[in-house]
Amino acid sequence: MTATLVKETSPPVTAPAARARRSRRRARTVALLFVFPALLLLGALVVYPVLFSVGRSFFDASGTRFVGGDNYTAMFRDPATLKAIRNTVIWVVVAPALLTSLGLILAVLVEKVRWATAFKLLLFMPMAVSFLAAGIIFRLAYDEDPAKGVLNAAAVSVHDAFEGTSSYPTARAREGQGLTRGRDGSYTTDSAVPPGSSVTFPMVGVLPGDLPKGASPAYRAAGLKAAPGELRGVVYLDFTPGGSGRPGKVDRRESGLPGMRVEAVRDAKTVAGATTASDGSFRFEGLRPGSYDVKLPASNFAAPYQGVSWLGPTLVTPAIIGAYLWIWTGFAMVLIGAGLSTLPRDALEAARMDGAGEWQIFRRITVPLLAPVLTVVFVTLVINVMKVFDLVYIIAPGPVQEDATVLATQMWLVSFGGGNNQGLGSALGVLLLLLVIPAMVFNVRRFRRSQR
Image (cartoon, rainbow, N blue to C red; front, side):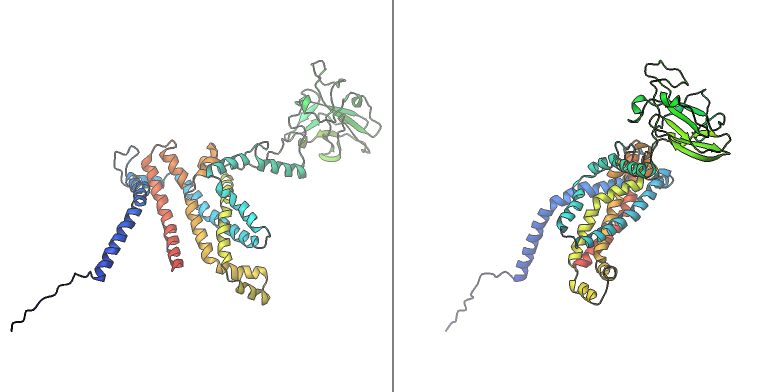
């Protein structure tokens, strides 16, 4: 008996491991297809410019001659670059610290405000304004002319409310009429006069339209005689509309100068003072026998207070940092407020039950628990201020541009703003990149640790 063995065959079965590998390859292929446009843009807009700038920094201004590290050497010998580095250090030290502190304080206070959402919205709104528009706004706000700059208008108003201001900054005495101008700008009679005398102060340099509304003609006051023991006089505008008056004589149509401060001086000491009336008249009573110099103090002719030179060489950098704070305070407040909302409330309530005050809770509980958030905000702002360009370039006027310059603006000025030395400008760009990278690496590592 012959037995025939029949070999049965079955369809091949794909191994699970092979199927999983094909699935992973297919997923990676699809992922690369989706990521490829972003990688292409990243390479074209970031990687290639960085590599090109690094290479360009080793060539001269024309880009044809290799100079090695000469651009980097020249960069640290240039006073303008050293000033830019100094200003950048000021920005990095001051702006992030102030913003983080303001954001923390506002985030804590907003929690106790009834309309917290509306308050946060108002503080965050400047983030919607472009740096260009914000720069123009603050350039106008910092204008030295009080008629244009709102900050100087406020400063002048406060100053004048406490110190007062001169009504006749352009006034001066008519020459050859018995008056001597002092070094401080005051005017004194050429010779001392005794009580019972009358003196006149003919002044010019004041437009009739600039006279105070209550000013009246000085003719009648000038005709009055001084009583015994009295010293009187008149301060008037020695100008007649139409030119028919006589110099040094009080004519009928000539106005007195009210509000002038007048002093009687004896032995270099002021013994009496008075203020002119609406017709410019003044008088001193009860003077002792003797001779007195009559004086118009320099305060009568002081130039009006014009406010603060916000955009001068001294204050231009703090002024620009102030504009930066206006824009970014809302950003810091919102991020810190988000971290504040995640704090364990039981720890805060337990501290209050134990008798801790709000300041102790803030200092010993709130701030330590918010330390990770505060660090992220601070480092993010450090990276941001290193690249600040728009505000500095727009707000700082041309004459003080060098006093306010930072590395970003100096890089642009050297490369395109008149220097036309793109080799040196590329070296500045590389320096800026090297300064930013450590802060970026720190931020990324901290973010990864928080994700774990």
